[in-house]
Image 1 (cartoon, rainbow, N blue to C red):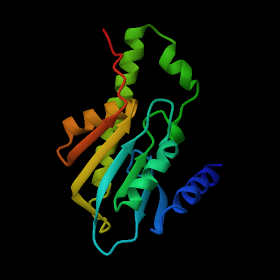
Image 2: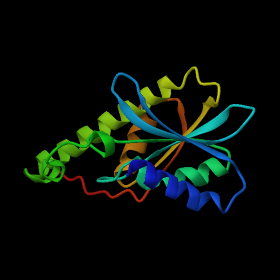
Image 3: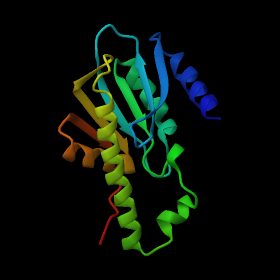
Length: 173
């Protein structure tokens, strides 16, 4: 199912542009972080764009955005957030909604912080990759991915530019 969704998405986007793209699935670092790399063929290192998905999503749901960015010349990294995608846990929905609001917010923030730490480890993992220019790293994300983007930007100086999208501010204590 995973490959079918990936390749259907890649084929539908690729028709609109003559840029040949590469799509790779990897499990990286000791944390076993599932990632997709989407990038065009290039003779020089490419700037990196990391895109973080929203709550209840996964790396595949934003693949169309990754493809579009790769068509523009970026090396795109899409990673599963903690407790999402290939890292999903049993009773997933109940995990976030079974307690009082304060406890749920703390769980949500723990996922954001942990995912931000994972993004930094993914960047570390790319340090010897000749396809990427780690002096030019940007990040974006939607909803929960927007929070991850802000948190990563604040804590990892290698992120040079960020554009969080559709950030929903509901965390009240």
